[in-house]
Length: 168
Image (cartoon, rainbow, N blue to C red; front, side, top):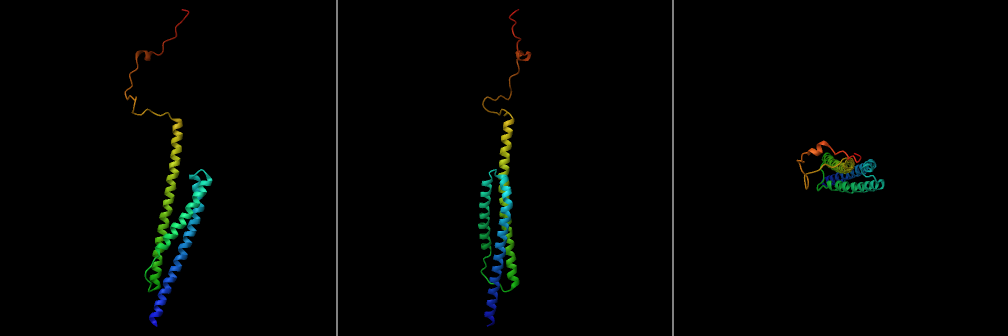
């Protein structure tokens, strides 16, 4: 009888820890997705001048964030054993929640880096276009380029000839 009670207690502890993990993980992912979606839209509107496009991309990113991170959260907490003590179960819970937080941070920082690159690419492209509009291109080595131009002739040094005087 004591063995049956012990097995039931460890299984109940394991199920309890699963439920606590699921509630915390899902709540964390939902909160982060909403926060990142709300604040990320401002950033995306800066990156993408078309407001409708920025909003659509933001919604797709939020959905992707939900799918990826909820999937990772569920995959992280796969346990093939029951816990003998509550301390062991809570320790396992902390390990999995810490891993989930690290994965969430990596996903978030990767998104920020990608959009930073997109924004800089667009800014650099605009800067190059503005520079090309104001600066004449310098000749580059290639066909017809002479690094040693010919020396000026005597006629070129004295300037143009004065106009002929027809009256005189």
